[in-house]
Image (cartoon, rainbow, N blue to C red; front, top):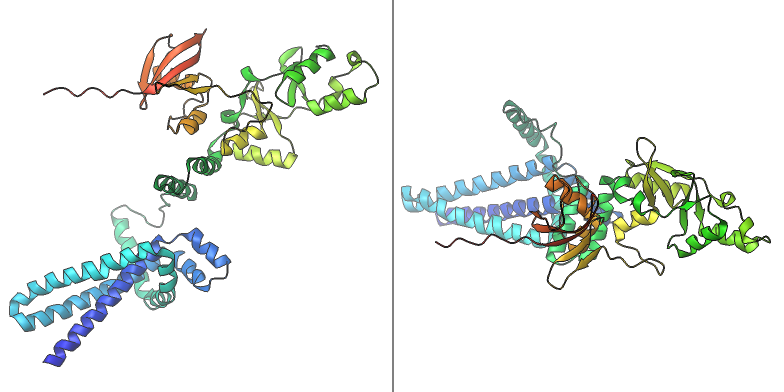
Length: 428
């Protein structure tokens, strides 16, 4: 009798160890980073290759682990019930339930999963060879279970085979970046840069271009001396040149080409033919994806393009620097005028030019203003107000109060943004 009890107790302990192994393996292999495993695999880690193969078929992996875990848990509970009934009679069922619940919860669930979470890579690599064998052994049973599950779910209108992943790879990366920034392991600047790369696919050239109202252009009919003076006073090296009509762009003048022509010309400046120095303009649709435009810049080895709408009208211009600034933030050199569009005030408010892009102020102030319906701050206010506001009017939305402080004709040129005041609590 005593020997039987010892053997039964030993079997229960062994089964609990197996249960802990299955629980920890499930946590480690489902939480392990695919990118990290791929990195280890590229550096010659053989176990990483096994892990990669296992997690590539997660449904089969989880099915095999759950099958093994349930087998050992049920068998351990059955043995414990039999043992306690022999010792305590009918009341042994209750004692066995309480004892096994505590043992399974503490030693077979919480403890191994806690360790696996704290040591994900190490745990996944350690258990992979054994789990690979278990998946192979339980393969037929797991396949049958999956078939039954799919058929049962299909009865209730859920087709697993046609279901798509909830998160795309980009969304998973965004979530990871946001999480690590919240934890303090990724600083804001790095978060903005990584997020900028991921956001490029969702932007069009229209979103990042310099609007035509801010373009510096040259009139081909101007005398050469005047054009030289404009180029020298400009902070840009490439300037569009128009003829007869500002929408009729005939080429782009590069300051270096102008300087080279002035240096090599033996004639007077007035005889300089500016039109001969122009490079053909490159027009791109405003709906062009920013990533595609970046690739086009690299392919053509060009940094400058003019943006047109569906009617062929010039809407603005886009440069390689404009796209790079979406990733790294504002790029300033010794010839750039200091940016004054966003000016935080001592009282906690922020003075903003109406033409400031919503994405720029979100990046600078770490806000989350939506930019789906409008590109600029003024456009957002007009869209939300459903009107062109007057000076002094204020609107509250998205956690901020927007007060119009300057307007020119129908254009809102300056606003003051402050945190929205919470309504005062009513006294009982």
